[in-house]
Length: 331
Image (cartoon, rainbow, N blue to C red; front, top):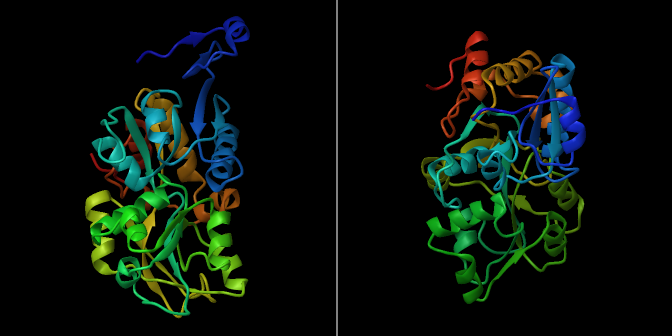
């Protein structure tokens, strides 16, 4: 798609219009970055990265707007935003046009993954009941809390339940409780004894887990069994990771394997190669401490991790930047 060239006069007259991509007479490019909720980690990271990119590339301006992990790929595919955060597993589903998406997203490309690993956490009350994930999620009378319906956390829990032959409706039919709410709501329900288990996906150290660890009820985090991790990887392109005791000392007796989601940067295919190459090169140049100052979860990002992703095709500009740095994304 050919992008419009706008003069300063036209910008002044039409500034209130929603324009997908701007190139001014001075060849300055403006992109819209769709992130997460205002005040959340994704929004903070997007704001920090946009400042870094502008600092090193004065010809690129980025405006950050709120969004969410499920909706962002669609927004970018439709050209409403040109760049944004996505979640590895759900962005891959968007490309394929499978649940929770109803059509293939053929116009999205990526700048790789590894930007902000997010662990999936199943917290259990230690007072009674099974200690393993399969036993917990298939027991009669299960009382579990999860984020809002259709959040990436909650949709992952539903995928696990389906794999185990269960569902929210079955939990309720068997006399249990399947509670949805904000992270604060779910934490309060756990502390009050309304639920005995919580399923969330949060980058460590998660404030919710820290608060529960310091509370009167406490709890333990639960390992993800091999077959569940393999199912989520093979069927939905999730990743896997490990929680160490040092991550949550009061909630772990030792290291446990967990399912992992990671952040990808998704762009519309129409963003010029030169622009995407500059953005990607800036990220590569500033890996390590500079990215960590934007958000601690970005400290471990490397180009080697970024190119190890198959869920969304790489934008040619990003591929060129990675190759110039000695890393080869998939063709």
